[in-house]
Length: 267
Image (tube, rainbow, N blue to C red; front, side, top):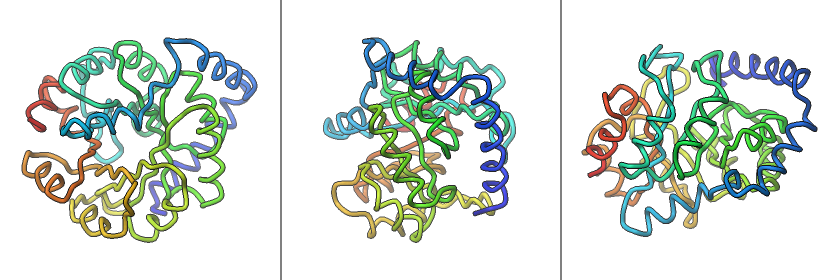
């Protein structure tokens, strides 16, 4: 793992330990199970929403709500998750991805709750998931899907976390950066496979990462290309290779109207 990911995971372990003293796992489990019975909070079907967009001939775009990043700092000063979520939905987003990591991305759980309450599309909790506690917490705050980053986890950990998520009705996006990680990701059951074009060690971004790993991706997987989608030509390059799902954050967060930027990029 890269130094930055090592640091984030170490921080996340301390966070989980501290949070579990404030709100117990049993409490989160109770809220998660209650949410699964409430119409407003039931899982909305993250993977299904992407499949429906692609089936209609459109791109299945996961639009990100992210205030800051470790490499770029503050991305958006006027940061109102509910307004951004509504703008994304109005302009054709399939799903949302909301950063909830506080230490490195200036996110919080409340951002996810505000965004989800303001729209009807599914929401991914974008965080560094390393413990079942976080999965129960994710469902308790209303998330419809979670992220598993192969670079941060052992295979057995991922399988256990995925099983926990699926028991709660959560979909899983598994993220890889290279061929070795992809081999491990393919051991999971989820159909949703993200290839991050950002090098975790150098933070350099190249779309060639997705294209080079594409031959290794079996049929039946929904491939999501992540990071570096900045122009219509980038979108066309991916769609020419039958890659129809995208996770885009920075390009939209820097735009005056994120939803309008989404429409223009994928029109």
